[in-house]
Image: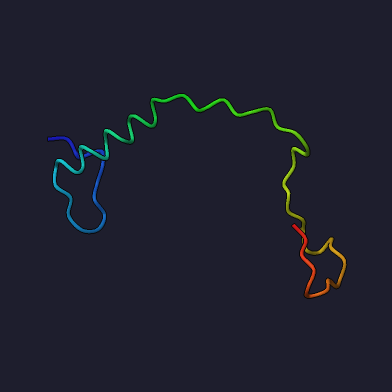
Length: 64
């Protein structure tokens, strides 16, 4: 007998539950990723490195 491809790490799963999650994972893997819309704006990350920020920000200000 071959070892199972999916293993329950904690708790107990009935064979039907393992089969259901396997079917869901296989269905998700088989679908093609949705075409992402054309991105506008900057292609880089929207966050900034703290060491490159000015030293002080007023506590009531918010920068995103």
